[in-house]
Length: 149
Image 1 (cartoon, helix red, strand yellow):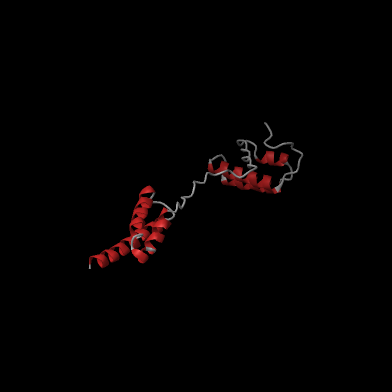
Image 2 (cartoon, rainbow, N blue to C red):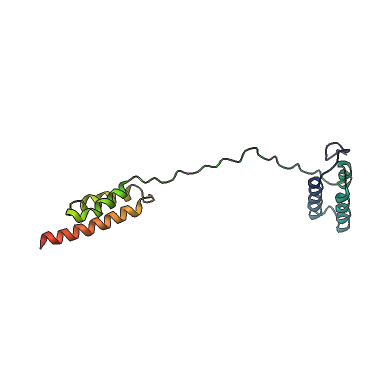
């Protein structure tokens, strides 16, 4: 039978014993061991000092799978680009707020706000674009009523 561990005379560590116990539990769940055999072999595994003694515990069972290799570097993840604030929404808001001066800046505020929302509705400056449209429309209505009366 091929040894599941390296040299049989080397000392086994706690991690080796735990790995053997996990393999025993897996074999028990697969129906290869009875409850009595499982408890006897777990006791032997806990008392094992060398790899040779762990091999005796695993006699008649499938070989242990080696632990997966640990990557040296953390995996790289793709981070999607963040939506950028292009400034059209902010410009629309500023022009809308400045509409109280003469009302003429209200028209570009509405136009810039609509263009900003039409370009991309998931923008960082979406709120500024909406506020620019609202303030521009408000000042346009106020100055329109003032001129008409």
